[in-house]
Length: 149
Image (cartoon, rainbow, N blue to C red):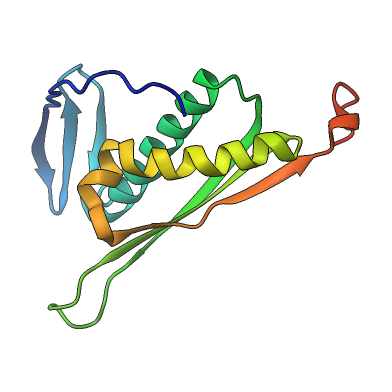
């Protein structure tokens, strides 16, 4: 497993300004913006899913890079499951698919995915409400450089 740098405190800032109806403009502390809200371009539920997906992806790919694993492809989907009763806990399901070269890298990526689940900031925030169903696809080593995958 890659060495994890010492923990450091992080702070992220945003601001949301109401536009009209159920929409607003969300801005990051770095000045990026997007229209949010149930009448905006992105609902809060979609943003939650994208946060979970993109944070897990970034963490896993950084760990793979640190281990020298050549990731050939990555795609994922997310699902937010909200129970009918307001007392039940919502759940987030991520289904990432990672493509690597050879069985050895596949096993290493599976181990790194468990580590990414523990290190991803958003995954840690979601806690037990997050499930990751990893699919690792292997391109045979003899296909390397041929483009036949």
